[in-house]
Amino acid sequence: MKKAFFKKILALSLVSILGLTLFPSYERPVKADDFTCQPYKMPTQGTISSYYGWRNGSFHHGIDIPKSGDVPVYAAYAGIVSRAYYSSSYGNVIFIKHRGGTAETVYAHLKSFSVKAGDAVSPGQQIGYMGDTGDADGQHLHFEIHNPEWNSSKSNSTDPIPLLPDETTSPICWDGDLMKKGQIGRITVLKPINLWKRDANDKLTFVRVLNPGEVYRVYGYDDLYGGQYNVGSDHWITKMDGYIKYETPSKWRLDELKRIYP
Ligand SMILES: [Zn+2]
Image 1 (cartoon, rainbow, N blue to C red):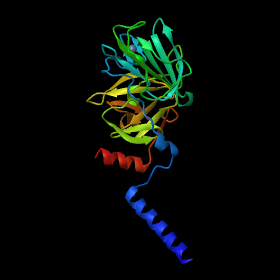
Image 2: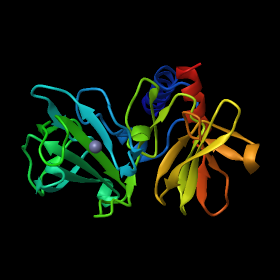
Image 3: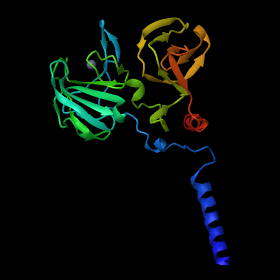
């Protein structure tokens, strides 16, 4: 009886000592996916030369990363290869489906690929080499992200930049995506809505129409133009009920982000 009691006390104090040392006093994440957060990775080495958006009168549905020599290309996210073949425009190209078919990435103009349809790939796994096959102007990787999947009009394409890591990316996960410095929330586009850029005098310039399903990190909000969310780099989305869904992370995540980036 006495022995059992002491055992219990010992166990309880161990739990509290471990609890105090291992876990700080802030709210802890509660969802299982908090521990399997997986950001997109850069799909190759090199510097981005061309961004997502209008370019010489046509829409560029991805980003271009040029580099000379033998340059490995990596899977940006865990997934299953949906296609790996030669197309006259994309050249040697790999398509990979992610997150149970809610996203698909495209790696175009490859010199060669080393995976085939049905292969499972892990993030950062080499899948081929950069090249200039197909309709390419010099050696580069053309990289696209689609939500939920690629189609021939590429209408599901999304800007890869907000999804790729940079020097402002924190180790804090929120529903599978990493939070970034200064982030206060996120917007999911529900109906097509305009993306605006503000100049130094807060004058608006139309950038493009955002597609349903696109997700943007939010860094601020103000009352101009009936209320707008700052989605980074002076880009803004107007608060319109039914067109966007705005969500905020838990206080724990916001506090942690402030601790990392005071
Ligand atoms: Zn391109």
